Length: 140
Ligand code: YYY
Ligand code: MG
Image (cartoon, rainbow, N blue to C red; front, side, top):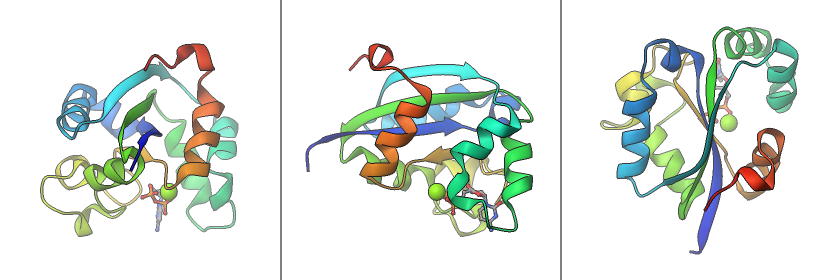
C-alpha cells in the first residue's frame, strides 16, 4: 500500500473541550503525519455542502447545526494506508461500539457528537481535501 492522504476534522464537541492536542497525539502515534491544519468556524450552509451525501438522512439538519456550533480543526493526514489507518484510530461512528483505545471510545459524547471525521475512501479524501485546502497549504 502506497503513501496516502486523508482528510480529518476535529469536531466542535472536541475543540470545545480542548481535546485537539490529545487527538493529534493519537493520530501521530498511529503514524499519521499532520501535513496541513487550520482552525475554522463553518456556517451551517458550508457544513451542509460538506455533508451533502447525508442530505436525505433524518440526522442531517442536527448534524449541520452541530458542525457549525463551534470552531473545528480541519487537517490533512499523510501516511502508509492513511485512509484506513485513520478510520481505525477514529473507531466506530457510535462510540458505544468503538474499540478500546480509539479516539471515539475515549472522547466521543454520542453518535452525533463523536469528536472526529475521517474520509471513507480515496475519492472522498480528494474531494474533502480540496474543499478546505489549496495545494500550497499541503506541506508533506
Ligand atoms: O463516517 P462517520 O463519521 O463514521 O459516519 P457517517 O455514517 O458518515 O455519518 C456522518 C456523521 O453523521 C457521523 O459522524 C455522526 C452523524 N450521524 C448521526 O448523528 N446519527 C447517525 N445515526 C449516523 C451518523
Ligand atoms: Mg462518513
